[in-house]
Image 1 (cartoon, rainbow over the protein chains, first blue to last red):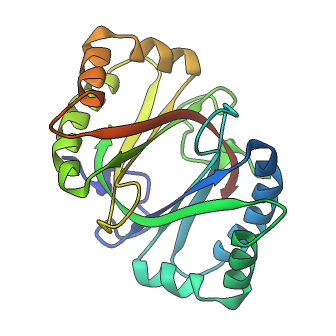
Image 2 (cartoon, rainbow over the protein chains, first blue to last red):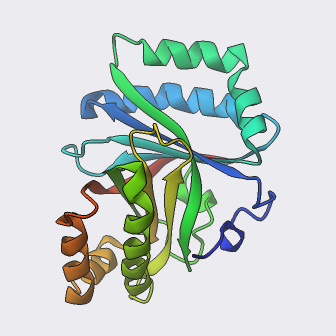
Length: 118
Length: 118
């Protein structure tokens, strides 16, 4: 299988960089409001040491099971864990998770890239 | 919100490029065998007009609800649809979906990037 080193994450050490993916189950009508709050949290994370990049994806179809998917890259698991421990981020993340206005189920996890093309 | 044009997909027209995400629910012990077949299908797609890139992600934790996540970029929805219509790909994809050896639930969809950092 091909390796992470072929991917556009050259700014980090491919052998240690990690991919964080968060798959959100949320009603289509709640996705815009959730995305605005998500952007505020992402702005905080983007200033942390070891942050590489992040993208929030919105399903084109309102019928899609997973309306929002975040894919982020960090230089190491340690950097990602340290950034997430910042109360300024964690408090907002907990508030979003527990929101009554925009109920959401988040499915976060760390992933390795095991196949890439080209 | 920031725009796709800041992302590393400069090889395509950001205004028309699309992101295809496929979220796979599969038993951790079946993921390696599935990934090998997936790589064969991705090799076919990677030669099609309009293909930009694709990555198959593997959850680091066997407890993860979604063990495999594919994120691919195509220059247009039309190019992606045309590539997927190739029987050489479609037959293999259907076989994988219906496999008894490695039962899997695929959740494919087209997505727009609505927030990016940096």
